[in-house]
Length: 453
Ligand SMILES: *[C@@H]1O[C@H](CO)[C@@H](O)[C@H](O)[C@H]1NC(C)=O
Ligand SMILES: *[C@@H]1O[C@H](CO)[C@@H](O)[C@H](O)[C@H]1NC(C)=O
Ligand SMILES: *[C@@H]1O[C@H](CO)[C@@H](O)[C@H](O)[C@H]1NC(C)=O
Image (cartoon, rainbow, N blue to C red; front, side, top):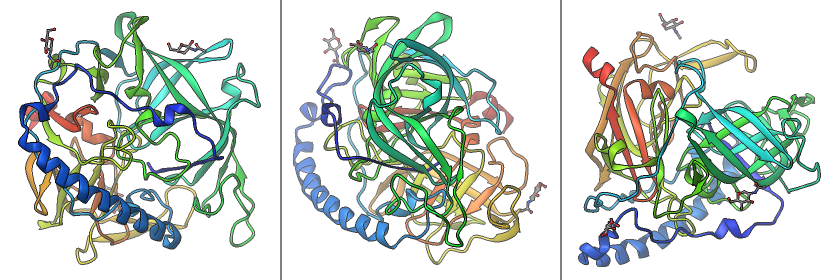
């Protein structure tokens, strides 16, 4: 899912908090001094890259009239910059970790939920919280948190492009307790957008409209939504665009990366390795050797706010084949928030499409990738413009039932770089581990899937 955010000008010291060196992994550059040279070189290119990217973003936000599900992806840089192949990180000493089982059995149709208590003023509010790896940041309807002063916080808004929903409210830093298996707990503190108003607003332009949903182009009135049921937790990475006022689509807005106590005892970066495993069973918060030794890891490019927070990493690199024809490398999103896939190819790579009657409200018709189209995706690191070191692969035929196949496939506007959002069924074939400390993404084949091959 794509979230765009804004707020009135104000920031807290938390925004600039840096993650300091810690004992969870050794500094690889101490072991390999020659990498320093490479790093210095890459850093200088990277500075340039960021400047160019800033210009590109300006351009993209002013020229893009298209704010559908891939709003974020459409402004991804088509940079040829690739991750440095670093030597493998020595094993971690960090042993703190908590498993959060999902409330319900994992299903294609439903977003997974975990049990959370939100500490809001004098109230402790229990919520079954959706886990969305396709966005970052928390949204909670104000009526759910009556203990919070209606005037507290910094005004802000968010726009969820996949569903055309605008949320307006106030940002507050709140403490949350996650409830794990066998009574275990993990506490986190993150900024939350406490939502006062929300609209269904298909014509919303995040670069212009800010805190309001205006009337539509044909004079349509915005449809106001009930905010009493809004609960939303984005825990994805690589989703931020370094936009001013983008407060929570960052590592410091990710509830899973800011754990400060486990079972009531304070934990720091010496005890818990920032990161998490996502599977069809639940979430393992905090990476340990025990929980990740069977994963194959690929390196991630640095995220756009990596300079402010070293836990910020870009979306993983991938390359796909459609009916056997190979794309150039692009970006992937492994999104627990949706059952379908989104796919976008570069200009000269056709993806067979059909136009069907829209099964939901909105436009009368929608585009779908044609049944019978075969899609294969490889995940790995890009070196010299090519995808190498493939760590996970899968394929399916659109419309044909198979375990990892998404419920349907939506084609995107033809535009570089290629992009794929796998949807949540990816987890039926692979568990994934996001290592925010060392900038890696790991894949572990799901045993039952492998034995069915
Ligand atoms: C792990 O702990 C041992 C003993 O405390 C220490 O000597 C070692 O340097 C630590 N390893 C890392 C990677 O920090
Ligand atoms: C939130 O957690 C922090 C860190 O443990 C603690 O200092 C603070 O008192 C807590 N705030 C509330 C309102 O519970
Ligand atoms: C594709 O095939 C599936 C399964 O047979 C069917 O339910 C679906 O309606 C088809 N979709 C399109 C767009 O033809």
